Length: 202
Ligand SMILES: [Zn+2]
Image (cartoon, rainbow, N blue to C red; front, side):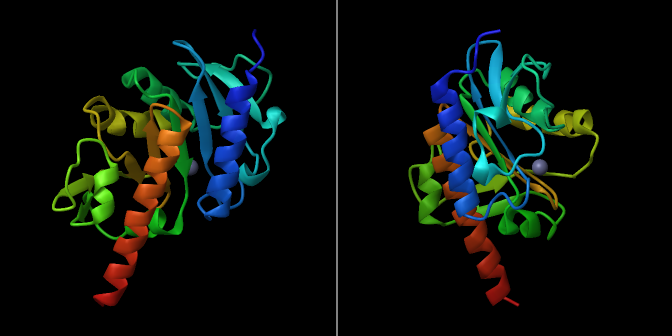
């Protein structure tokens, strides 16, 4: 097996530090991955704090989630693999557990509508703030294949935002790590705004 390239480790380490600084990956929460080629990804192994990653906390798996290096994969590795399989343009996937994503996803049964925010323009295909996007929310379960089945159609349809898991966190992806981080930052900003807005309305 080829060693994980330095650029991939660096991208994952830096993304972990960024997500940690913003408070999006408490304790050992979250997972970060990048595509290495058509059949392999590099991904954070199970149990590491995302603010303190190094080469030893990054492993390789194939797109079925099978480990290619000697480390324990997180259960949610399969959700990363699913995104790479369904979206050939996906080059990096981020999963975090922010306060806003956790609280808002528990507030209502359906998707979260994000409307009239200037920041909506950072998402693909959005030319104006005068629009709305629905962020899909799926019920949390420890049965990862079941969660993947629930998310399958949304990913295949090319959701511009990503998706939430109820009471758990967010998945976003992009063509490379910088694009995925920009998308996560945009989405987390929108979720934080939405949470504040709902507090004011009470
Ligand atoms: Zn998680």
